[in-house]
Image 1 (cartoon, helix red, strand yellow):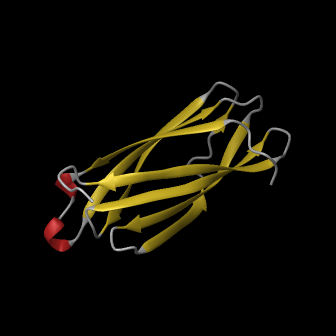
Image 2: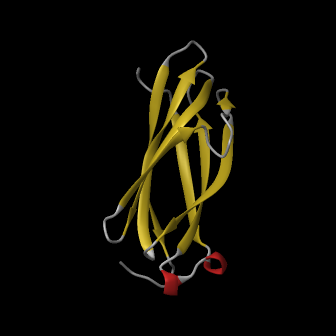
Image 3: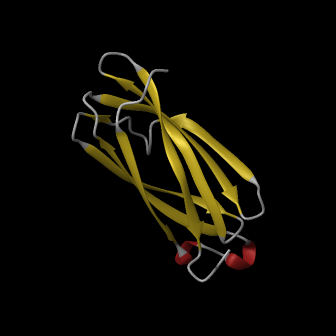
Amino acid sequence: MSVPTEIQIQVDTRYIPEQSSPEQEHYVFAYQIRIENHGPKTAQLRNRHWIITDADGRIQEVRGPGVVGEHPTLAPGEHFQYTSGTVLPTPVGSMHGSYEWVSEDGDEFETPIPAFRLAVATVFH
């Protein structure tokens, strides 16, 4: 894979109490991702890879095509935003990963997704 173009990723997270059952160790989190192409080339997102870690150190890996059933193509200056979610057995955890892309001229590259925290607002860990 070649050097990545300038794809920037922003993440917002929130705990979903109405879908969670803490007494059953079931904590639901939503995350909203905004992907921006600040590079000179159009690129299409092909695959995602997530590493999800709970407070007990258990790791779940998720790999798959696209995001939320889509393979967005971003021209320079464009962005794509989506919301997804995950379930943890603990009230605190984290996620990080990467997106795989192909540019308009066929170069494949990867954009890392920096770690972000998933936490119930009342929990400090």
